[in-house]
Amino acid sequence: MTNLLELNQLSKAFGAVRVSDGLSFALAGGEALGVIGPNGAGKTSMFNLITGTLDADSGDILYAGKSVISLSAAARAKSGMARSFQVPQPFTAMTVFENTLVAATAAAGLSIRDANGHCLQVLDQIGMMDKANDPAGSLTLLERKRLELARALAAKPKLLLLDEIAGGLTEHECRDLVATIRSLRQTGITIIWIEHIVHALLAVVDRLLVLDFGQKIADGDPTAVMADGQVRQIYMGIDADA
View 1: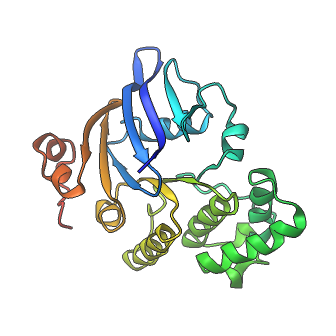
View 2: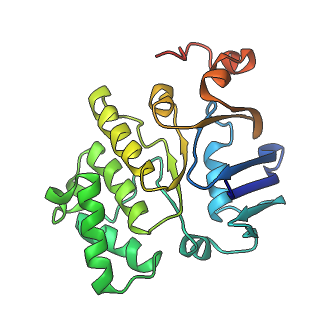
View 3: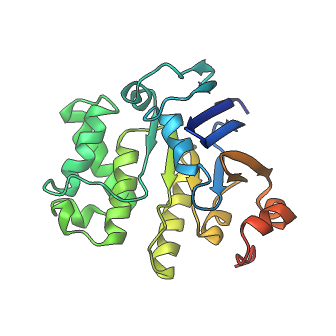
């Protein structure tokens, strides 16, 4: 398969703190990559570097075979990158539908007419049609997490970046979310998912990447990665078979 995304020796530091330290990996189109690591490992910083909200000190990012390192965050979004945030940040005074409409018009570049139908399809896919006219500020945590996903999908991404979207959910809610993300894989979308709930990742991803202090510790088959001694030490107390 052709690589959709490549990080080549990507580095970023804030003073003595290195949030990305020569990070390199490639992701094929249609692949799902899970990312784990302790707090402060550089996981969200990696997303910020990929999407352009944080400038790299050195290295390169190839997307669809072309360097995007000099592109703005807006340009990268329009090229097909979309993300959810660890803490949901909807426009609380706007409805659920209006939140998705912003993404469809601003990022995907759709006309209002085309965006209307597209957003309704996304809300139906995510299971939020019954909340379409509700203010985003009235949503529960699970519903806000789903809206984060809906807004990202409304942007018509080729690359979907999910940042701890299962965090704070009950076991039942987590299962529902995993089922939704698994269904998205059937569309051929490429996914990078940062998550502390490892069993959720293992139900979805093809590969597992482990970061620590901005460096790649392991990358490969999820079962093999979770059996790695160094990974077990970093993730002490987490049962790979949970």
